Image (tube, rainbow, N blue to C red; front, side):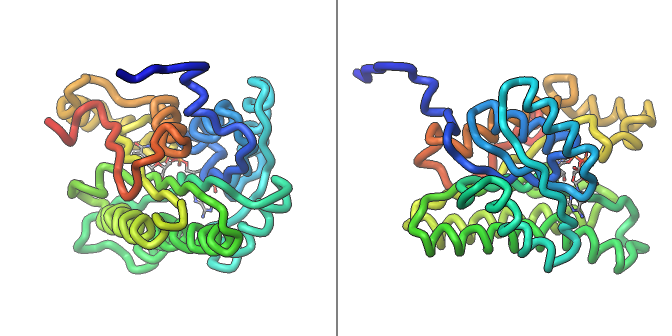
Length: 262
Ligand code: NAP
């Protein structure tokens, strides 16, 4: 029999942790940043636009949390590397947790998909998260500190969806990164996992959802009969970033209203 003593939910606490959340200016990244801060971490909020990051910071402050604004353009490799220093400086110490939520997309048929769009989508969605985790992982291993890396993947990490070839490739590639890093770093106490959101109404999906016919077609495929909310991605991310998932690494949590399982 398991005897639970004290406040069991403390196992989900991120109190005293320093976290980076990319894409924290809006949408899923904003909700995740609020969740990670709500669980007690001091969070570096990252994206290109500082105005949206400041809005996220104000929301977190209103709820009693702490966060810092750190602008960076993840389409630049140099900025990704510099981000590790900037986030440590802003948070006042080494990083414990990194959540990669920044993402971009280009919708076009594979036959005409342009190379510049391919390069941009791969850089922001695959190369930048790998490079940032590589840089943070190097520092965690050099300092003999445990760490926690969470990648925001997608249903396209496991399913093919039309007109998204670069996004599909990047998000599938992210799962390769998750599996590889989890194997290489497990012995050092660094866990690496991903979440796979189903469809959520954000700036990224606004155009898709604006077309009533396409919207209904998507809804018809979701067993719960509705899209997800950004907040519904935050708690699973806190779970992965916390000791509540201490024996879990190299995995993808699918949060999609049942789409992939149907
Ligand atoms: P979103 O509302 O468009 O937010 C994207 C975020 O990424 C913004 O904060 C944006 O800020 C930032 N970003 C984009 N390009 C960047 C760059 N070059 N450098 C730094 N930051 C950059 O999208 P979302 O729907 O919340 O998506 C968040 C994540 O969830 C993405 O990885 C996406 O692929 C994934 N996802 C979304 C859905 C969905 O249905 N919405 C489903 C599955 C997975 P700036 O523009 O200010 O830089």
